Image 1 (cartoon, rainbow, N blue to C red):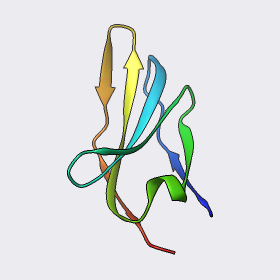
Image 2 (tube, rainbow, N blue to C red; image 1 turned 180 degrees about the vertical axis):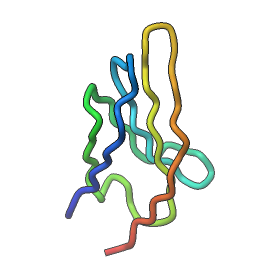
Image 3 (cartoon, helix red, strand yellow; image 1 turned 90 degrees about the horizontal axis):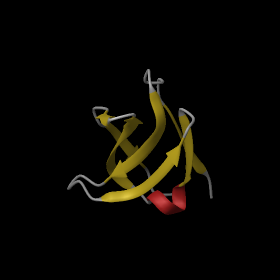
Image 4 (cartoon, rainbow, N blue to C red; image 1 turned 90 degrees about the vertical axis):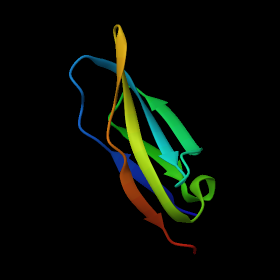
Length: 76
């Protein structure tokens, strides 16, 4: 049980955001779309290990990707 909460700063002009939790190889482990700057994902969906996460901001006429950040999820 449990959840992981992700929070990021708003991007001016963004209409929505896509949070991606990635494996070290770059495969998507979990994804959430939101109009907010927060998202919650159950630990059971992410699993354990060394991961990375980042946000894609969708704007009129384009998309902006954040740099990815490290995320370590310990096994329970």
